[in-house]
Image 1 (cartoon, rainbow, N blue to C red):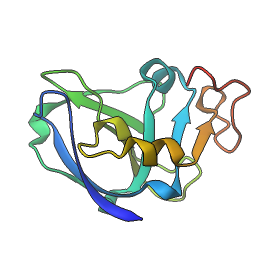
Image 2: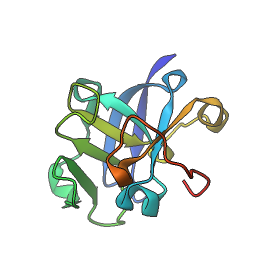
Image 3: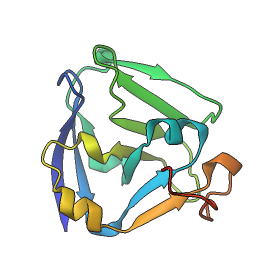
Length: 135
């Protein structure tokens, strides 16, 4: 069921809202960035995401992937979402929302949602990695 969630970082400086349908599934990626964070996310279209704080609340990290932007809270360091400028197999730019930053996350719904595993480590986005237990 499509629902509008409010989300935030730990200290509440970074706030956002996003329209999400957990029944559509979540993702975990094995790339060097996501696996270190254990980033459990849901992909949303840019028009379904709205930042509710000033951009100045964010700092950003740009890793090896030139299309992935990793903003995080300047105060507490929590990584609440990613901005993906170019499609990784989707055909459109999107936002990866960290579902653990959703303020009213129904954990049972999240645990029952399908999970897609992405092999970002080998730039093989259409196939799952051989090992997923660590994600």
